[in-house]
Structures are given as structure tokens and as C-alpha cells.
Length: 363
Image (cartoon, rainbow, N blue to C red; front, side, top):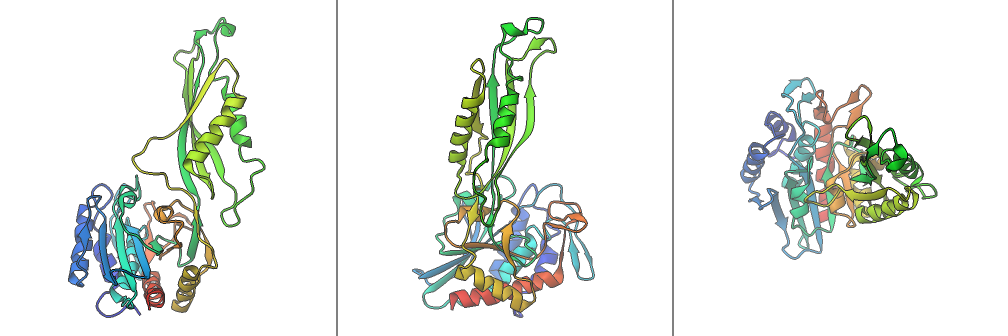
């Protein structure tokens, strides 16, 4: 059980009203205050990560419990009805945080074990916290809304811009220039066929490559000298961001007309992209959390997670994604939507499951 000293639902009732879409400071203050009140002695590093640990200093098993405190904009006000908490962050990811806190406070690591709670401040944007996190774990549980299922894999997300460079000319004499927009025809064909012949991942299925934004041309009576196309890549292992960039550029250079130059660059960001990850569904971490979820009253199904997550920063160590709440229900989007909510029974179930799983891992 989640114990008498810490009530995850009561914590969630305090946490959801605290806006953390533009400034995570007040929410981090609440987290630090809660950890202090339970004798956890937390620290906040230079990247804004909140970290607390207990157990052996040189452990044979180091379990890391991770989630984030930032939310997307705009802030959605807190509301409570029987058995349901509404508001921004209720499921993504303050509900999972509440469950992880219950497990952390209840944990009593054995003489060769250690548990660390590591809560990041910037998951929804650039993952600056996770990228700077200096925690060397052997196993990771990442809190996200999974409907109490145990998620062992997720696709990565890369973004980049294809730039086509031709030669401007008068539209009355189009053959005197090199039409960059006209070259989009061959580019789009490359995108459609890019994954032909590639094997689907056994858990995540096929990668996707989608054109999402395009712009080009300066004047309506001029052959356009430049055109830019943004693409969205949802990757599967073992593809990396650099590997994707190189292979797509090679394919584009082979297909675009000789009179048009083509470049492809990934979108600049100060942190690595969230790449795909996959943990063996038969790994002991997976089976332990799944059994604990079922014992507590959850489904405990083992499946992929449908969104990108900071869990990829911790792979290839065994990592699972788990928590109360759902990304979407039968009515539509829940996380990141103005109807965001979490069931209080699911928060308690997740807390009980994590308390049992952590005890089993660290004993």
C-alpha cells in the first residue's frame, strides 16, 4: 500500500492548481517542500532537475524514478468532482509524479541497492533537464499517463528542413531558370518510398516520414529559386538522428534534377532529439512492474508508448514508462487538451503498484 505518511491524491490536489506551463519554479518549490517534509533532502542541479536519493552509495542495483513537472500551455484550471481531478498536469505528468513520490517515500533499499527520484523541468520543449541529468542508473521507471499499462518502447521524433535551390527567371521564359518548386515532385516521391523494404519493428511497427510545412517563391511571375519543406520523422530502433539525416540526404541527392541543389539539415536544438527506445518485454523490470500493476488492480498490459518520451535518454538501460491517466480516451484527446483529467482511483492504484514494484526490485 502507499502508506499513511504520504497521500498521492492529496499531493495531486495541491500540485494541479500550480501553473507550470511557463515557469516551473512554483511547482518545483512545492516538490522540494514535499520532499523536505518527508526527510528526503532533495537537491536542485544547475539544469533545474530535482533529485533525491536513498540507499547504498555504491549500489549493485540503482533504480531511478523519473518524470517531469512542466506542462504545455495554456494552463487549465484545477477542478475536482467525485473520483476525478481535472486540470493541466493532472495526467501529464503530475498524476504519475504523485505515484512515484509514494513509491520513493515507501522504499527501503536493501544493503546493495539505491533508489533515486529525478524530476526534470523541460520535457515538453527541449529536455534540457534530462540532457544534463547526471544520474547513473541501472533501471528506470518513467512516469507518464499509460492507463496503468507498462510501456517498453516508443518511437523517436526528428524534424528537419529540405532546402531546394534553383535559379530565378521570368515566368514567361521558365526554361531559362531552374524551378525549385518543380523539384518538389521528386522530393515527395523520395519521402513516399523512403522506407520501402525496411522491416517493421516488432513492437513499434513502421517508421513514418511526413512532409508538414512548405514554402517557396518570391513573386507570382517569377520562376522560384528556393523552396523549403519541413519533414517529421517518427523513428524506430536502431535508427539514430544522424543516421536518418545521412540516409535521407543521399536519397534526395540521387533523385533531384541536376539543375537544382538539395540540402537537408535537422532542426537545430540545444539537446539531443528524443530517439526511439525499446526494452525487451521479457526483462525482469517489465515483468515486475506489470505484475505489480495487475496485483494492484490495473491492467498491467505490456505495450509501446504512443508518444515520444525522455525515456530514450536512459536507454539502452532497461526502462519502462508507467503511470495513471491516458493520453486520449473515447471522446478524444486528454493530455495536452483543455479536458485533461485523471481518475483518483488510478492514481492510488499506480502508487500501490509502484510501491510494490520498487520494494521487489530493491529488496
